[in-house]
Amino acid sequence: MPYAGVPPVFDDRTRDACVVVPGIMGSVLQDTATGALLWGADLAMLTNPWTGKGFLGALRADAQEREADADTALRAPLTRIRATGLLSRPWWLPVFQGLDPYGKVVEVLERVTLGPGAVVPFPYDWRLAVSYNGALLARAARAHLVRWREQVAARPEWRAVGERQPRLVFAAHSMGGLVVRAALEQDPELAADTRAVITVGTPFLGSAKAVLALNLVQAEAKPAWLLRHVQGMAATLPGVHDLLPGYRCLDRGLDVDRLTPADVARFGGDADLAARSLGERARHRESPVVLPGHRAIVGEAQATVQTLDEQEPTGRAVAVGCHHAFDVGDVGELVRDPRTGIPARRNTYGDGTVHGPSAQAGTDAVHYVFGQHGTLMRHDEVLRQLRRIALERPQGVHLGGDGAGPGLETPHLGGTLGQPLTLTATGLDSPMGVCLTVRSTTTGRPGHPLTLTAGPDGALSARFTPDAPDLYRVVLDTGTHAPISQLVLITPPDT
Image (cartoon, rainbow, N blue to C red; front, side, top):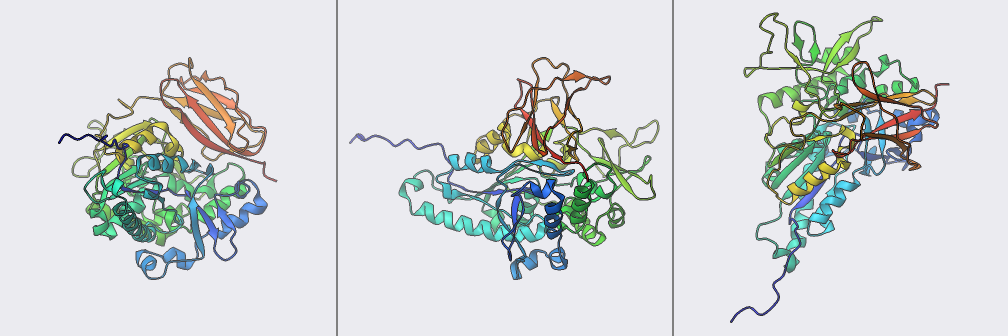
């Protein structure tokens, strides 16, 4: 008999379970004993020295937190501070700069899964070691997959979407990609149950900005109290040390060295934490971990600190960021200019925090996008690619084409009320059709377009003088690319 019913038409959805893993600073942190929110709740902790000093002091890692590793997580997880959720409002920190909330990513994935229960966030205490958080993630991801498989099995209409068992898809930003790698390395069975790992701006080789964050005591920018207390906090955190670059990054002129624990201590970090982190970097160089279904989304065309120059103008080591890297040959030797023997320097750009080679290490499945590191997870092109990968679409073209495109530069230490900021648009020949705006993230007041003018070097820049302490969003819209945004914190003058 011919079929006389109406054949069902299913929505375009994946049957897999998704886990969203934020980057450093991307989880709200709470004091377990008092219930006080220590991170990600109130900008006063960054703009008001009377409250900010207490919050930043509370976030310093104690001796037990500094030593915590994967075994600690499995045996007796730490409880002094807990992560309560993903960042839900724009945030900022000197050097690392702005960070957007993760709500858009969760929404996009929920729209392409069978039900809201398929997508869970994994907030974690980013102050602690990657290995510690990786063990917690492995346990949480396994529990989520078990629950989701039970839900799918209980729904006949969902079973009809496909025959295979649901698997895991990880969507990870920045440090979150390192946490996912640690989880899958520690739990090979979980890796076998993973269909895809999507990393967005993950520093697989490290980020030179981590050294700058440890060296803030040398910075002359204002407010001094904020830089001093952020540096004091960062120097105790295993998580910050786990972002240290493992590649050759110390420019010595005629040679280029890798960081040593002594170097890190000289720049303001902790030698023991650095030794553990750099040891992990060396281990991954010798035995790389291949992530299942790894797809990397990489920011490009943004001015990015890639290596470091060490100076001692006052007898204390000062790390100066350099916007170039070094080519390395097939056997690991530096490529040198055949005429002079000087190491060949090359600007590889990046997303403003992670340079290109670090974010794409370990995979050839790369999507490029013009965007700033902390705002990538709200970037239209990034969200589109996350949706495509979740739905198992074929790999598309590189978003950035030949790598030539617009970039945005803002002060990485923020600004002071009453002092004009210089905002720079790079990679553009003319201001025609280009719109640069600044608006408050707290009031939502639309900003007036700024006038871009060409300087002696051809770069386009504009001046902005803030009229109130706040966290501001700078948006560069060329009319032909997805807008690029960055966050800038403006604080009151030092008193």
